[in-house]
Image (tube, rainbow, N blue to C red; front, side, top):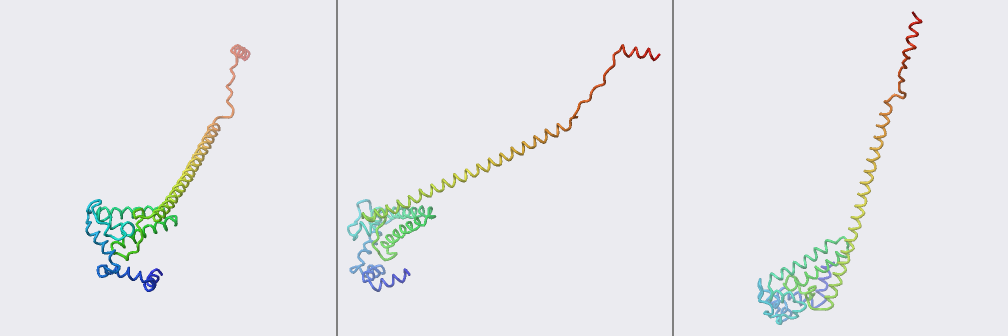
Length: 231
């Protein structure tokens, strides 16, 4: 559907044809729409890996450098190494958004963010046709900054909600384990108590019910008197 819409837009809108022609060969259409892309490539190439130095570049030669082509101006003055670090920061933000992708809202907003970064950097490096999208938190513009801050605020709120849910789930799990442990301990105590009772019963049943009465001894005088009568 998206490819079909792009083809239809290319045949309907004339400025899209100009952008596509400038993307295909910006130097052939240098005076007719390719000037912006050509100057962007010149700035990136002149910056090299380490850049020309802060405030030592020529961002004035890049059309709309503060919004559409801010990445080219940064690469020219600070270098390709810093630009790669900037790209890694944007990718790391997107990876952090994927950590809370259990919420579909966070996944959608994170995808919008990284897609905007891709459109901006891909456009200034001639990877895709230039669209004029701003780089989040880098390009000049109040509306772009406000919308990006709202996006990050929503994702941060979802992250806090997720942390609270995980803490509550962990607390329930801990209480359940504690309850099971207490139940096992009570069951063990009941078994030990019943074993002691049966042991007491068995030891008391072994003893005789009545003690044997010892034989009574007759007195000595009576015994001698009886012996005389017999004689």
